[in-house]
Image 1 (cartoon, rainbow, N blue to C red):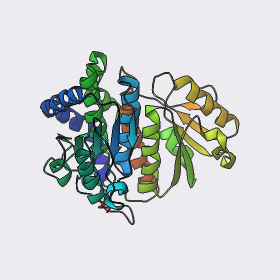
Image 2: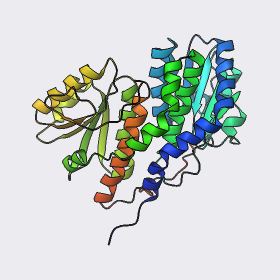
Image 3: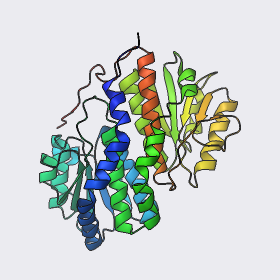
Length: 343
């Protein structure tokens, strides 16, 4: 008898529909926030987030710097919530990312940023949340209810909302077109669950996830999901850093998942993947540029900045299968709850 489908799997399969719903319903909010960014013309931005949402913020950091030349720095929410400091943020913009919009430290940091002179923009699945109330603009993720503890469709919709905002601000027509084509691409991506990589994980208790640039953000998200849903020790590294020490623990068959977008960093990441494979690691990479590592089937999205969204969708499909194979319920990981409210 087959096991019942997990809530996590149902939500992963909903990702293309959730993205389509965001694109259908979110245009007015995105346009208003993009116009506000043009008016503010920030010399820099800050991000406020934790957990999966902070990986979205890392993705948007790289995207902003590559697309608009505007740097984004992550600010620890404790600056406002614990240390009660006020930063001088005059003329900047603040991007706060929180699925629930309820965590007190995120809310307090967004409030402080606005008081310090920043244009405050929140990305949240709850537009009536405390975070939305303290922000100048709240971008509704339109992801629908997410019941599994592990964030999947809210992560993807946060990333889509953020990159959509940046594309409208930059008036980048090519990126805008790729974003609006995402539902069709993700319908294909969600069907890939990388059985060859799942097999290599076997009963191993440690894994590396690699990325570079915007793909490093989803590498970090992948490592977190291995921990959350599979009780598997996973570490994320930039492919530029992994050979500077972490490689020492690699032994025969050590599993590595290398996530590469189709951008300028792809060849460099493929080279590191091959180097790890030559050292005996079992390496799987989302690129055809590898010669020693094994290439994973990947759905490309017609723009390098949206490729990471497709890759993490396929990863989610894979990691749910890994959890199930290990006899772990990914919907209710031990010690975790859906909303973590940090002071």
